[in-house]
Each structure stands twice: as structure tokens, then as C-alpha cells.
Image (cartoon, rainbow, N blue to C red):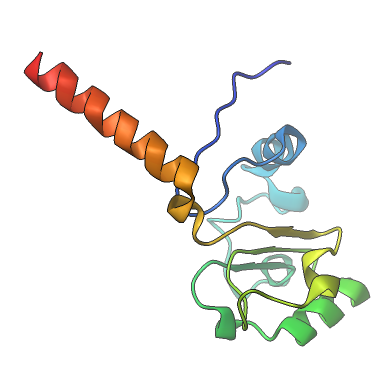
Length: 129
């Protein structure tokens, strides 16, 4: 299936690969056969413990412990856009095949600022035209 994709330069993921989104779609209602979506299950459940997402503050996750969890299989995947030290030098974590890393400051890119500016001009033009 072909998708009409655009880059979103807001903070957070700018563009996720289509296979990642398709897998998310497939597991949205029934994550790993649990009968629940990730949003419905207890944050204390065994299935939920396999997932690590940190988009808040870098110090919230012990990166070395996360890497050990990924390597042992106790943690199935991780999504990160903040790190204990930025820019991070933890290439073992950021290059791990089950880790998705995105820039936390995506909206600070020059392209993002230009795009937002053009969008604002377009909206203002529509309102006052």
C-alpha cells in the first residue's frame, strides 16, 4: 500500500517508518495477544514492563540498565527522545535494533521554523482574504 507521507517537524518523531506504523496499527487493539491495547493495560503488568518510553526527562531512565534489559530480552523495545546527557554518547543504546530514537527538539530545526512560518502566513491569508 502506498501512503502520502509528510515530514512533521514538531517535537517528537518527525517520521516513523511505515512498517513500524503498520505494526503499531496491528497491535493497537491486542498488544502481543494480551487482549488489551497498551493504553488499557496496567503499567505494572508483565507485558507493559517490556516496553520503555521516555519523552520526558533523560534522567528518568537508567540507560545502562535499559541496555541490559534489552540485551537480556526483559525489555522488548524502547522509544527515546531524551537522554541522561545530551547529546548522548551511548551509541550501544541508540544503535540497538529495538530502540527508536528521535530528536526532542525537532521543532527547533530551521526547516521546521520555515514551514511553521509559511503555514501561519497561509492561515492568516485565508482569514483576511
